[in-house]
Image (tube, rainbow, N blue to C red; front, side, top):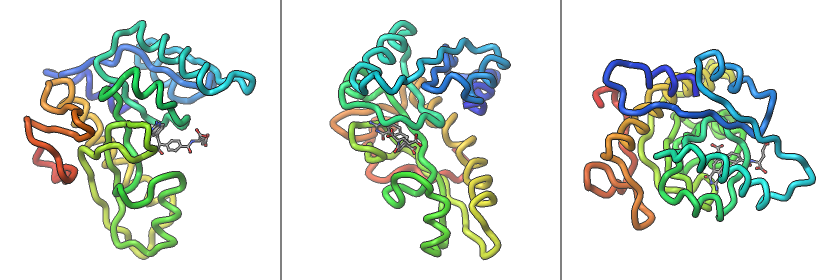
Length: 200
Ligand code: NHR
């Protein structure tokens, strides 16, 4: 989230971050956004509020900003099919694995346990299928024998900070879109995610 805000202030940036939302009022990201001068709104998910009601409230608060795009960055609540439908094709997530490998939680640990030679991060459109929406761009990192969860997470995150602002820029420039259940870049269907090289 911080990288997305910082890149939005580069000369010639294609997007602005209008507001940061969290379901956790004490989230570090809210403080970070505030410090960067971005408006924030916390919507605490009380245990008594059911998912559908919570997602309606969140959707209404977000709709007030009329965003072109909603970007999940460390947002850990599964969004209902209704929420996803309300903002169809306008939600991106970044997931810390080379999807379709390792959907779900604790990816760094699971990659180490599986002795995978490579790991990485994937930006994808959010659909009702968890971590299953069409992928847009991936960055890979080599897993070394010395890696632990923390070292691997740090290298993956450094890549996340590069590919997420790039995907948001593509979307806001009108180059990236979602249609027919697929991701499209420059009018071409992405059958595979773009592999980040640094030349993009
Ligand atoms: N919502 C939809 N509809 N589709 C996706 O692909 C989503 C999503 C919401 C969040 C991020 C994802 C990730 O990058 C994300 C993708 C949370 C969970 C989860 O199990 C899974 C995937 C992701 C985020 N959440 C638990 C829940 O019951 C709570 C876990 C917790 O609080 O620690 O919501 O990893």
